[in-house]
Amino acid sequence: MAFGHQKVESRRLLLREIASHGPLPRIDLAERTGISRATVTSVTADLLRGGLIAEVPRESHPDGSARGRPRVDLKIAGGAHLVAGLKVSDASISLVLIDFEGAHLADHERPMVRGRQPAADLAAEILAGLRALVAEAGRDLSDISGVGVGISGVVDADHGLVYWSPSLDQRNVPLGTLLSQHLGIPAFVDNDANLVAMAELTFGLGKDHSDFIVITIESGVGMGMVLGGQIYRGTRGCGAEFGHTKVHFEGALCRCGQRGCLEAYVADYALVREATSVGGVGATSSTSQAVTTILTAARAGDATAKTVVDRAGRMFSMGLANLVNIFDPELIILAGEQMEFDHLYADAVIEEMRKSIVEIDKPAPEVVVHKWNNLMWARGAAAYALEFVQDRAVEALEDV
Image (cartoon, rainbow, N blue to C red):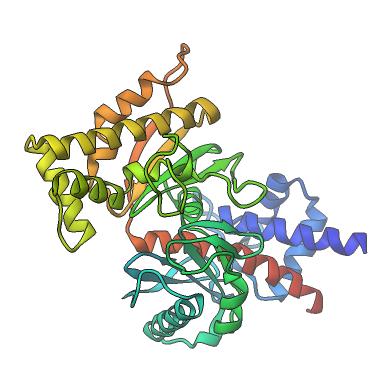
């Protein structure tokens, strides 16, 4: 039994190494993982027989000569599995389809019927989106081995349980189980900001960093945190809830139901609520249009709009400073699709953050802006699901 478990772990480790750094020769795999060459040969033979990896000719020697028998490298077999990823937003669902190697095959975006709805209705919308996605790739829904789902709110990723989300009209929804049953596909749910961090770690600005924080600025404020090269979620799945840290005792009402949250002062709905209640600025039907009106008015010198925007910037800089003082990350990435709303990452806001962090004879963490579209968020969800599909594929090799 112990030997069987060790073999599965070796398969998993080698498959992940090939996925992350391949194509690689067997000798490099042994050196990178510390697994003996004999075991690498045996385990990769299992992976080859199971169709999870493939041999590819190694590039010729720099002098063009052929030395000994032809050498081969090992790569992921892209056609072994298909994986989908999607992001649930206020107004739309964005989906991508990738192969087992992570190559992009298709994408699709569709409007949401309602921004907040019952879980069963959301599952039906996701199913419709997946059907349209696979149709664009000329594939069937049954070809998908797993789907990653990013949704805003408080999520227990280990159990696929959504404690609260602005996209759902109920709390404590076992969304992972519900979607798996409704779709007929294993579904893996996580907070959408965590999946942005996963995307940054896998193929983004965080690829060369072991410790970094991603702040997502959309209709709300989210955070994904990578510590030691791993996503940090906390023991209850409630870790890294930056938007719901408290900045004002008994302050403004947040959409989570509590008062004084950071999000209740800096999110787009918070700006609109305060500006319209105080001075009527931004009183339009669309939140996006209203925020644009408020920011334009603030830049033009409107006193009410400027007060609202300036306070949001001060609250945000205080929150960033607290993060730096607690975690001291290498890098902070400000990410999101609505980054044209630049009031939260203006130079003055970042400078205010720097003034509020612990001073030592080393520079403050780098703060960079990375504008994402929703399809890139969905790619993070697909990368998240891909890890589960890899693990299940490795476990299934016991029957090969």
